Each structure stands twice: as C-alpha cells, then as structure tokens.
Image (cartoon, rainbow over all chains, first blue to last red; front, side):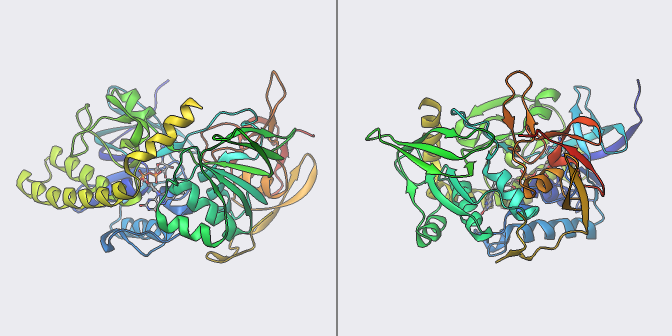
Length: 360
Length: 97
Ligand SMILES: Cc1cc2nc3c(=O)[nH]c(=O)nc-3n(C[C@H](O)[C@H](O)[C@H](O)COP(=O)(O)OP(=O)(O)OC[C@H]3O[C@@H](n4cnc5c(N)ncnc54)[C@H](O)[C@@H]3O)c2cc1C
C-alpha cells in the first residue's frame, strides 16, 4: 500500500507551549512550519490550567494557563502558521518520514527538519484496586472538570503532594468536590509553598509518611485504605475517586522509533530524549522541546521551543550562525533563571518520593 | 454531573445539547464533547469489563493513551470514549452492572 507524500521544510509535532513557540520562532526567520496535534484544540496542557502562573513577566506570570495557551494559538493564527488539528503523528520512520492520521485519511510527511514536542503522560501507581473506575490521573481529572465541565467525583483522595497534586486538589474543591486527604510518602510536602498555603486555608490535610494500601469497591472506588508508615496504623476514607499525581513520563515513542538516543533521568521523568543545549537530538535535523525532553514547566517548555526553532532554522540555512548565537544566549540566560527558581522550590527532593513509591 | 457554575470559568459554555442512548436509555450530552465525559456525567463508572477476569475499567488518562475507556459505539466495539466526540442519537453500550 502506498500513501500520498507531502514535502515540508519544518514539521512540529505537538501544539503545546513548546511546539507553538518553536513554530513562532521559525516563522520569524521566514520558515513555513507545519504543526500537527492529535487534539481538536491547540495549547496542550495549558488548556486545563485555570490557575494563575508565576515566574517572570516574560512568561505570562499572573495569567491563567489557558489564557497563555489561547494567546499562543492566536499569535500563530496571526502569523499564518498552519496548525493541523485532529492529526496524530502515528509513526516517525528512520528515513525521516512521518505517518499522519486524521479522521479522514492517512498520509506521509517528508520534512527537512522535525521538532518533537509531544509532552508527557501521567505515571500510574500500582496498588491493589488501582484499576477500579474512579482511580484516575490527576491531569485526567483536571481535563474532565476544567475542559469538559464534568465533576470527577464528590469526595476524592489525592496521591502525591507535588505541584500537580496540590493544584488539582485545589481545583477539585473549586469545581465543587471535597478532598478527603492528600497522601504523600515522603516526610515533606513536595509542591510550592503558595499552593500548600491555599490548601491549608481550606483545612485540607496532607498526610506525610503515608501510603495507599488499597482501593476498595466492586464496580468502582468506594474507599481508600491509607497506612501511616511510622506507626503502621491503617485508616479508611470513604471516597468515590482517587487521583494519582505521582509524576509524568515523557512521550518518547516517536523519537525512539526515529532512532534518537534516550537517557535515564529520574528527576526529569525517567527516559528522556538526549539532546544538547540547543535541543538537537542524536539524529540529524531532529529536535526536541518541552516535557518530552524532560518534564519541567510550561515557561521552560516555551523557551526550549524557541531554542529548537532557532536550531532548525540554522540547520536549514535560514539564519546566520552569529545572529543565532546572540538570540540563544538570551534564551539560555532566561532558562537558567527559571531553573534556579523551580530548583529552589522543589529541586532534587521531588526524586525521593518517586524512589520511595518504587520501594514501598 | 456537569459543573454548571464555576468560580473561575463561569457558566457552562458548551455546544448544543443532544440526546445519546446509553444501553438504550436516553441521556443528555453536549455535541462534540468526548463520549467519556458524557458517560461520566450520566453516572456511568465501568466503561468495559476485562476479557479474562471481567474486572471493571473506567477512564484513567483522558488523552487517548491508556485504553481503559473503550466502549461500543453504534455497534463498533472498543472505541476510545475519551477521544470520540458525541453526536446526536449516538448509541453507546457499557457493562450492565
Ligand atoms: C496540573 C498541572 C499544573 C501545572 N502548572 C504549571 C504552572 O503553574 N506553571 C508552569 O510553568 N507549568 C505548569 N505545568 C506544566 C506545564 O503544563 C507543562 O510543562 C507544559 O504544558 C509542557 O509543554 P509541552 O508543549 O512540552 O507539552 P504539552 O503541553 O503536553 O503539549 C503536547 C502536545 O502534543 C500533542 N501530541 C502528543 N503526541 C502527539 C502525536 N503523536 N501526534 C500529534 N500530537 C501529539 C498533545 O495533544 C499536546 O497538545 C502544570 C502541569 C500540570 C499537569
């Protein structure tokens, strides 16, 4: 069987903050990128973030996540960037061609340069009963309530006290649910102080040094059993939902298929695509940006997108090396600042929870 | 249960309401929303039973990755409910528990 094949200079896979910024950078150098996203809207994870972001003015601090996403999409429309929605990049072959599936057809794309910005997927956590309906990823619950406006449950236990766990717990309350408890294996809360304080004001308990023993229920979750790891005492909470916020893994299938080298970095989400400072992978003319290159934050994903866009344009011969060098320097400086902020708040100890989750 | 009022997002602002059939019974849904959210709003929790042990499964990731939300839609088995948009008159089959 043969498919139609379309040729492009630059294909960007994923229309999240990383992919959209990569495309915007590329058009500013007179490149004509094509962006693919399997979702029916652009914006990636930002679409479901109803909280205000912080960081610097440059990264949209003070705006809510979904607003930042909408603005990026609008900017792309202004610059006439072609974004194909409902278009899944199903395969990335070693000869460099990409197999795309949309609701009507399957076709091939051949591009001179490809930026992969596919983001990450939530990690599950196995315990007896974890497959029961009502146990879901915290990000999944967030999509359900903030995008589709359906309440995930009335009373929910959150597993994990990192930023995702804290933010989604707070947003569940905003949406009308109650939180039975937040369960954390480590002996300290993992997320930012601001998020923790908001929950404290609501009187929500964060159980440190606790673990999930099992979920109970026949057709769906009815209760969760939680053990105090210091005393061994077990508590039972009646809940109709358990949200897992125990980290994310980069979606590395496409780069892996293409032949890009990976490396293991627990702090960045496990297997990530190996890349240099300018977001070049081990395969020529293939770049990564955002969570797929290591799970961090939207603001970092945006800067990485810009770097990948510059690198692709340099390799396509669209920018002079000297000009690129100056732009890169500015971006790398901002990245250093961003990483210094998030490093101070969470840094290395995000890791210890994950390691404990693996061992308990 | 739909969230009709939200302190930040305001009133629900979804597409037109349509009727879908869950195991033959009529329910409301919104045109174009994922089948998975319409089912959850209608109170369905078990979307499928596993083949060997007949254990219930429901949505986990909501982004088309985990396959736990597969249902039968208009006679076609194993369709991912979280990435399939709702249409008027759609007929969805889920386990009768
Ligand atoms: C609850 C929560 C709270 C957060 N809060 C903050 C915060 O306060 N501040 C902050 O800076 N960051 C925050 N983040 C993190 C931020 O959302 C992510 O780091 C950021 O969205 C990553 O951007 P990305 O472009 O790499 O990936 P994503 O936003 O995940 O976008 C990836 C896109 O690629 C598409 N895609 C994937 N695979 C394919 C394929 N094969 N074919 C076609 N398309 C595909 C997806 O549909 C998606 O649109 C939060 C995250 C979560 C979950």
